[in-house]
Length: 333
Image (cartoon, rainbow, N blue to C red; front, side, top):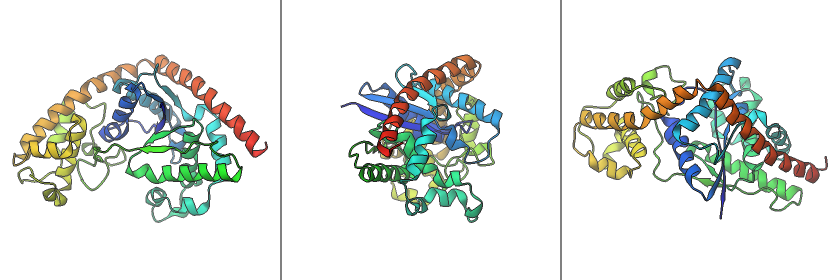
């Protein structure tokens, strides 16, 4: 049975190793499976929940597409488009916001984390964007959605909204109830400077992350300077509980090498951390260098990137418009 897969990436610019291992690497594998029908969306509507420079946003949209292509996603096999160019997303989000319940949104932990203590000053968009995420998914009859730990709650909300809409309008099975696709071996990628914080573009120090546009020397230097300790490499998972930075580095090695976490741990058991870092640097350079080179080339081919987005918009719009028309009929518009 064909899986209909939908996923999105925010065009924040300067995508890093956490974005690659957490999402894009998986997208490539899904794209290459002939049993899958994939839609990869650059979610620019989600991006404006925080203030964006208009020129930077436009550039970042192209850079996200370039990263998709450079990483191995084939635009002839999958649909790639940016969300704002298909108006059905905004319309469906409003309709579904009339189905979603305040209590459901109040439970969203990501809003609490992002809004912080002064949530009264947060935008309504930041609060309600999980409803837009539900619209993104449901418009395409998606059967599966790749999610990390931080997005599982949003997918549960999507499922609740779909089920309530179907029930309220006695339109059973109109919205498909999507299933999560969670990579079992994936280890969440944390900051190179603090193993308790997620790798992020927003962290002040560039040494905290490996950018997908970094050159060989930058990657080697960042791994060399990555926070660790002076102890030998651990020999068991129990030993890692108090060594979050070392655990993160082993997780990066396992994820980039497609290896089991415990096997990766055993490979370096008892060795010096410097020896492990040297090996990690080698494999990262080997993987990231061709992606980095291709991103830089593609960014000079704006017309090619824009054509991919235009073609993707046409295909996505055909699907989403038909779904919206059916929603109109069900709701009574």
